[in-house]
Amino acid sequence: MSCIPNSVCKMCRRENMKLFLKADRCFTDKCSFERRPYPPGQHGQQRLKFSEFALQLREKQKTKRYYGVYEKQFALYFEKADKSRGVTGTELLKLLETRLDNVVYSLGYAGSRREARHLVKHNHFTVNGEKCNIPSYNVSKGDVVEVKQGSREITKILASIESVKKREIPAWLEADHGAFKGTVKDMPSRENVTLPVEENMIVEYYSR
Image 1: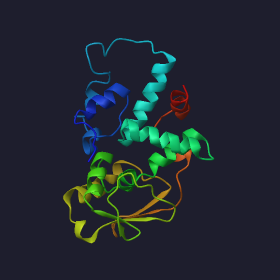
Image 2: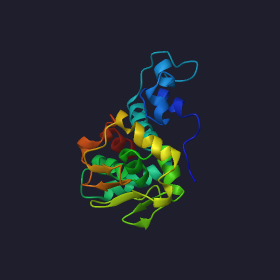
Image 3: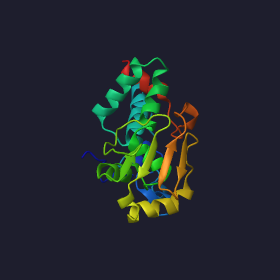
């Protein structure tokens, strides 16, 4: 199973923003980005001037790390978005937002996307009543994502439901924590993406 490397705090510092990769720790004073809000390494505190290519690369890396996908996978998402009828950058973000691991996290059943990916991979969720252990599965409008009956006492899931008040559930999703399920009310729009990203720069990066 692919996963994000353990040094995830360095990713936040490198992208100069919180990517919320370590669940509740990101909301405490122990957050590495709060203590050292500058890039890692001996030159991290220097003021650097970035080229146009470097800025495009940073936008791509930031988005890729935020959703927890690897380079080849991200490139495939871009290729699919580029072939769609909509605006390429917006379609790319829609594909990433509707990944099952992101939906599980957004509904509040996991503390981070990394944790959500682990739970999905270990068969703790169903989609429309059918087992689905593919984190990259893209949900559709009307889909119902539910915690399996035998997984509803898992400590991580219960803890995530308790702490979900620290973040908002996206408007395109509807969570029923009492029934351990969530519904995809609509497909996400560009306004629903909370990550501050200039997707046009990602398009320019791949259009070189």
